[in-house]
Image 1 (cartoon, one colour):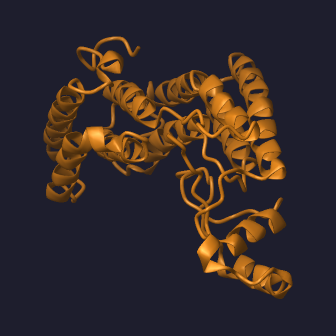
Image 2: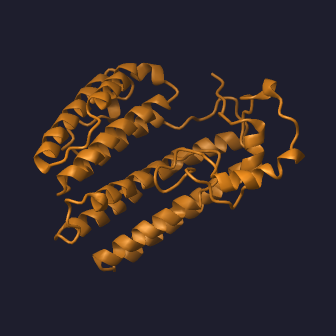
Length: 301
């Protein structure tokens, strides 16, 4: 079945090209890496050049079927240099004290993600890096967590390292997808977003279990559950996963408030883990069964 790469209006495409090298707010940021939004200042700069653009034709909206060669080259170059930099980073931090290792990991990963900006294609490598950093940020942001407590820094560094290694699992998938765009194939090699979502959710939940901060654990688990629903929705076969997405959406609506105490957080965390198991049971009836582990304590496949 022929697939199309979704694009904004023609003017937005022109904007993305003109803004090469300009930092976008909310686009591939170190916070989420999934949204694209210009700041008012950037929009003012762009609008000054818009009269030079061709008149927008609404009948052509949504009909673009490929990245421009320039856009594709930017993405592919970023991916190639990213893997080299991350491998080098892993080697460097092995010799550093934990505090310095954490600092270098966070700074370098943030820089790598920001250098992917602006891009017309999201990559699962970038998603994984952002989600690993988000766990560390949640730990640091929890006022009940003493980040100087023995073991906390060690956990944070381990999370960042393992997130990098997990991101490598999807380097080839991302590259194949970009190459299929570059070759102009009618049938694009679509990113396995649902498979990635399930594996990443299990991976993050397992990392989360080792943390010592219960409130941070709750928030991380809650966000992980929600991101799984987004990954399922963005897959080509999202209609197969309706039951799982519905379960997550209903649960999120009923559990909006962050627990204020550690006992409440521990109780809420158990509820999230139970809900995750129900979601995974639903997904066992789909083509995703092969990537679901028997238990979150089991090895991540």
